[in-house]
Image 1 (cartoon, one colour):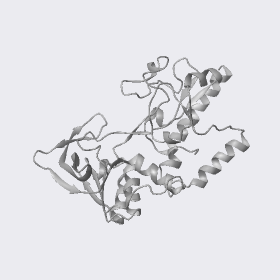
Image 2 (spheres, one colour; image 1 turned 90 degrees about the vertical axis):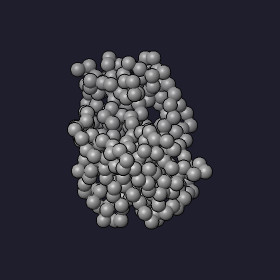
Image 3 (cartoon, rainbow, N blue to C red; image 1 turned 45 degrees about the vertical axis):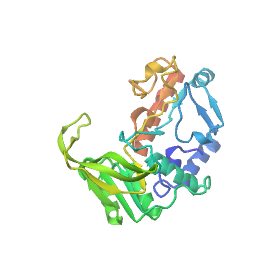
Image 4 (cartoon, rainbow, N blue to C red; image 1 turned 180 degrees about the vertical axis):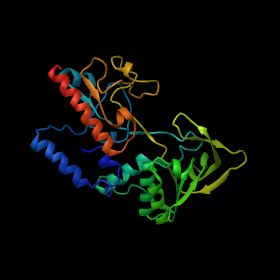
Length: 299
């Protein structure tokens, strides 16, 4: 399906699917854009969310040779790990996978995305965490906890969304971070958290959460949703000798502008900046398209 995260992760009540379809039809009918679906462009090997629909893989280097200019907008289709023991247990899922399966069920592509559960814990306070918590409520969960290591003031999603969820029945817990997933017979049973206090600003400019010794507490849950952020998924890895110079040690794209060095490839959107709001990603894409146009005109 065309539309990326806007269609296959972000809830349809935030971005109606019909709006995306209208944009796609405008591109194909008014501008003659040709779509190649179920096709992954990649140099190197990596599994990303959504790959279960891939029917063919095309090498990015071949695409770059065939076309005069290539704009990479592959987004953020991998999730960060909590980094605690037990997170590989059944009943633990990242927010991207959770939301992705819900969208597939909405479009009739899977029958049952998730079994009904009574207690849910969502770790994080970004937009993915907000969406996951609200969708858990919609699935019929009786208790949904949203737990964040800083305060509401520092939450990436903003206080408005958190207050809205609290009004809907979400249990908000701030200044707490997971230390381990409590596992029983291979299934998540609870999450152990540790209280935090805020210290001096870290590299993000926000107060750093500092653990308080001896402050651990446990919350029981049948489903634990990790929503601690997504990471960029460029269509090339360190295995791709020709392009690995544009990746840092974490696999993120490093570029001074939208053009990748002296190549005919350009990059835009979340794959370059990391997760952003949709409007910012679209604006970023327009700037990259202008750079590509100047490149094609030899300016």
